Structure formats: structure tokens, C-alpha cells
Length: 62
Image (cartoon, rainbow, N blue to C red; front, side, top):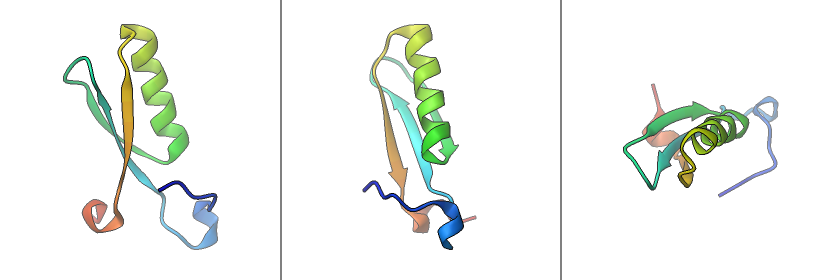
């Protein structure tokens, strides 16, 4: 689920898992912008399609 809330709204930063459909590439990212940057870089280098999935806070807890 995508929201328009920012971390300054009292929420923790969203965590994303960025994966590739064409290879074993998999990275985690803090925030939507970082996930998009990771995906864009990988797509530019490989021309593979990437997917960013939001990790629920209960799974991303430290």
C-alpha cells in the first residue's frame, strides 16, 4: 500500500525489498526514493524488470 505520509508524520521510514525478475538481484532499501534509485540503477545496467515490495513494519523491526 502506498501512502502520502512522510517519516516526519510520526511514522517510521518505510522499508522496501527490491527484487529482479531476470536475475537473483535482491536489496533492501529505506524509503521509497531509495528503492526507486536502486531499481533504476539495476534496470539501467541490466535492462531487467525490478519490483519493490513494501516490508510490513512487523517484519522489518530491528
